[in-house]
Length: 186
Length: 186
Image 1 (cartoon, chains in turn red, yellow):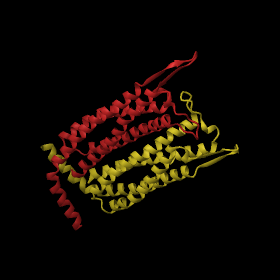
Image 2 (cartoon, helix red, strand yellow; image 1 turned 30 degrees about the vertical axis):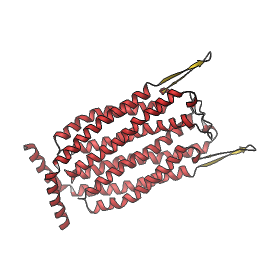
Image 3 (cartoon, rainbow over the protein chains, first blue to last red; image 1 turned 60 degrees about the vertical axis):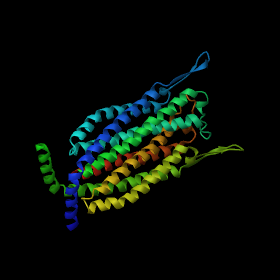
Image 4 (cartoon, helix red, strand yellow; image 1 turned 135 degrees about the vertical axis):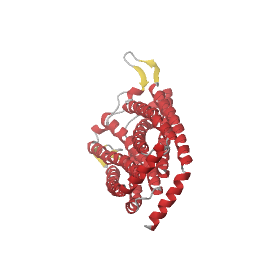
């Protein structure tokens, strides 16, 4: 009981000093979301516009590589697009939190959706990364050849498009931490 | 200013009634963690013990399939093991939260690590799922054959081991939500 009363006292003292901290966290939150929008949208566009046609072809087949050839790459584009659309919408809540640092129900909603989007983005990035690895190295046990030997520029683009997505994952973990800190300081 | 004062009043009223809610959330948190331990450990064991040797062999090669043949499956086993070890350790904090419902710094730490572990588990599960899909369906554009036509029981085991991992992902999202609710109700 005594320690409970002490804790309450320290919370009241903290409450008076934590307003600027929470507002600062909300501003950082806003800028991180903008960075994450650019990163995930860039990844989706980099993967979605990749297209390589090899200079030789037979009578029946032209050798072309596109992201739709592999369902994991399609999932990657969809996941990144969905996440960046969500981030654009979440900017509204982020601005609301800059103005009203005492809001807490909206922060809980934001943490929940951030966690869901973190899972979606990680799933897309990781599935695509697994295929990028196979494309580079192949697998001798499963008899899967490394297609990067033929499709050079295609492989470079899909490898590069991973960066934005994994950067977005890191930002999401920080965003969840920021929201949790703001909730605890309230 | 006026709405701020109103909010503070409603928070005090809520604070008195929210003790049992927070404790209930902490108990649910504990049980969900136990379920997640079983799920992720089960996934790691199911994948790690898979081993199929085909009944025919040549003079030089015995056809064997193990999880170490593909680096994504190794990552899957490692990720699931790490996450279940983390969950065992986090049980201590979970019990602490059942006893001390006013604790908030430890909840912030828990949300942060939960988010990190959510990302790790999703990455492992998703990379392995991408390979499981390839093993079942193959890919004609990349000339990757479906190895499940030879390795039947291996493919069944690796497909089954996905379940626990994806169940763990869902539980982590709920765990993060529960901690956020407990922080906001404090």
